[in-house]
Image (cartoon, rainbow over all chains, first blue to last red; front, side, top):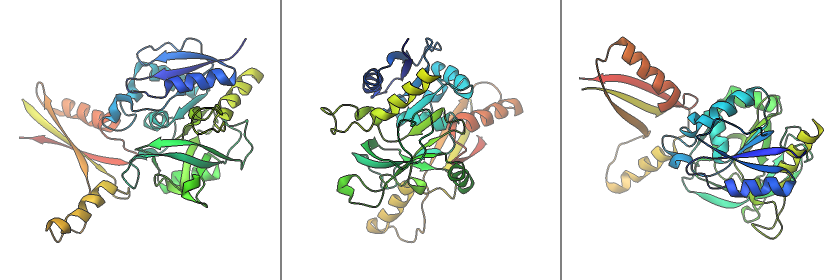
Length: 234
Length: 81
C-alpha cells in the first residue's frame, strides 16, 4: 500500500498541479484536497502549495488559514500529521501559528523569480530526511511576501533547537542563485516545528523534480522522497 | 449606524520598506522635513446594533485573531462618533 499525500487547493492557489505531480513522481499517491472540504480523505501527509490564495488579501495566507480544510489540518498537525508548506503554504502555516514568526513583503519591494541556492540545515525533519545535513541544493524561488521575520528570542530559539531547516546561501554570484532574495532574517529560507512534522519554506521544490522541465534540476524531489520513506518505514 | 475603526500598524521594530520608499520619494516631490514614514492599515467597521462593551470586546477579538497578525503588528480600536 502506497502512501497517500494530499495537496490542498485554495482559491488562488497556483502550484497544486506541480505539487501533485511531484508527489506522483516520488512514488506516492497524490490526493487533491479542496479548501471547503474538512475531510482529509485518509491522507498520510499534506502539502500546502504555493500561489496567491485569496489574492493575498489582508495578509498572505491570513484568510486561507481560516478555511474549513485548515481546521482539520491544524488539529491533525498538532497530533503529528506531516505538513509541508511551500511559499504561500509557508505563509498559511505561520498565520495558523503552526510555525513561529511571520512573512512580510520582500525588503526590495519587487517580486522575485529565480533559481535559489539553499543549504539543508536540518536533515531530520519529515520532509528533509533524504538530504544530508549541510547539503547544498538549488531550486526555484518566486515570491512577493517572502521576508521571514520573528523576534530575536524566537530566532535564537529556532537556531538553538536546530529548527532553521533551510538557509539561503549568500556567498556567491547572484547570477548563480546565491544571495538573500527577500531580506529574510538570518537568511532563513525554511523552518520546522519542534516535532519535525510541520515544515515551511519559501522556495519551490515541486518545480524541480524532473530534468526535462523547469530549471533542469531535480533537487526538489528529495522533499517528496523524504516523506515517502518516512511514511513507508512508519 | 455606529462606526468602529481598527488601525493596524507594523510593530516599531519591524522594517517597513513601503514606508521607507514613500519617505524617500517626499523630498523629490518638494515635501521636506519628514524624517520617517510608517505605513499601516485602517479598517472601518459599520456595526449593527449598539456598540457596547460586549460588541467592543468582540471587535477586539476580531482584530487580534484576524485583522492584525500580532506577531508583527499592533492594533488600536476606537469608536467614531
